[in-house]
Length: 348
Image (cartoon, rainbow, N blue to C red):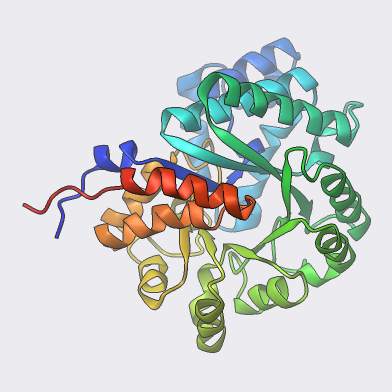
């Protein structure tokens, strides 16, 4: 048995596959944008310490839907090209400092059109910020466009069309995000048909705040290649076997799952059980701001509190590269590059 420490996990090259742009701002950036945009009244505090303290209250959100209301602090600040560029750049910069080599950023462009930008202008600004971060920090990235469960299907279809128009130009996939309860994925079937027809990669938030029936819809109605969260998968043993047999990856976000009361605690999280069963698990942040976390933090929690062994944690890290939405040859080359560097400490 190896004696794994957090410094080793931090040093490992990592892939982050499930991170929301509008939940991953820096505190200082929020305050500066609010000041510059004349929106200081939208924030619950006027300095970083106070804002951090207020945002800690998100941990008391009783449901996923209540958790999602906290985006009301960030999205109004993300309505200009300059803000979107800065936030995308800073997120990639922060990930690079955490030794994330490959980052998939997801967001719903339609949420950033409230003050006159088109979805194309929004997406161009985000892609430009990520490209500048790659130039400066060497971190590769791609964008996943999110349809929204609580919007009409026409909105999801418009975003799928946007995503398809950027395939090969920075957009790598299509997703469906938002509260599951009362908002079934099958209501957005036309958007997913278009996304699949246009050869986009598909991931769907499912099995987060609703049971495995939501995962079944994501797989069989939407054609998901990966599942976002998937916490309730184990409630359906036959579906669990299906996922294992077909090696369908889960994008697990431990802190977010505890915050939204999908699980009672880190110790009660089924992620270690899924890993042992053979599910290709990846570990991710979900929202670095609202979950006050990093990719290293989430991996360390998975090991120290969720029960994922050191040996299995190494495989989880490599899964992030194995199941990235990259062309096969690029993915294999990246995996060959990082695999020797994801090493366990020598056994004592």
